[in-house]
Length: 402
Image (cartoon, rainbow, N blue to C red; front, top):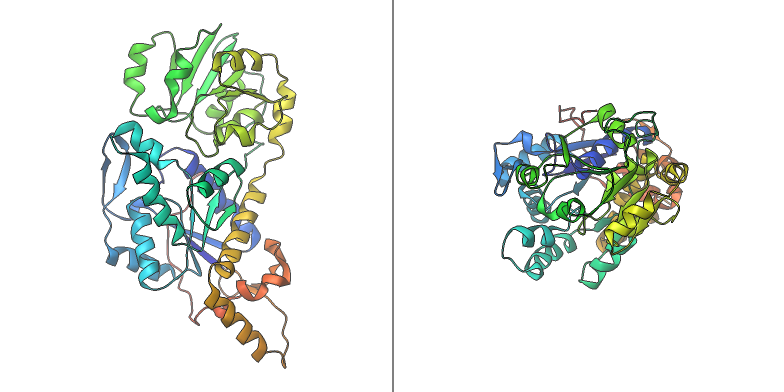
């Protein structure tokens, strides 16, 4: 089973979307499937207005079609609503090919924070974009409820995970004795970082990350330590050196940094927005409230062990399994005409029963239990059952960097 993920968010960007698909690429092969990526680096790019760190691909229908046809995927998943996502959606609709999408970003709020464009216009665009797919993957119950109220359809839950081997408690204090209040993420207006930096808190405030607001905030808050972006072990040490992780964002749909902080044994303080409301379900590991200063001070009193224990409940393996199950289920539930095809072909083969298997990773057949759906979806997953017969060519596609 081969899946192509079309995404406008990719390296050298450092954000939750990129990290999510990086880990998906690592975990999916363990479940017997393959994942390839259609990313901006395959095309010429230009800087995004107001956010030059993000490169927008200059794509054409022909270029998108060529790359997709070369990979010859069994399923197509569109991760973002940028140029690559839009062109991939157009390709699928033109060829009457089903696809799934993800809701990673509150795009309307991001746009409204930068431009005088009503949020309702952006939500109308996103609703049209996602509702044309066979399934929309959302990370949390609160995001699902909000989108459902706005007219979005066919939503499916896809949670996230955390690397508990990398992000763990460490005996380090990179920023002094403390207390240290930490923020990690993009330094951009939609992250509401100013709400954190304006707080009257004891000790020290530290910001790890970069973005278009960095220079302005450094000038305005000279007492705050801005470290720039960190990755890997250095990022893990930065988390472990903090006493409280402060998450001021009102627009994130999940917030992977919440799990990374918790796994590092750092309690979290956040506003009651989607993401924190769904992740910080244990009051012993984080505090959610409208008074960010009060929540940050209260979080100082929480147990680092409880924070770590809460993060251990999130697994990237489980996240990858949910992704595969959603892809397969969406291609059944979203397409009535496919269901008719499945019933017809099952009727034709009743006199010659065969073991239901899924073609995973080229020509290798394996039991479909690897994605925990069992025989009930065996016919859906099997490329022998409903995909056009063809031999897949091996092509070099972008791979995730660790």
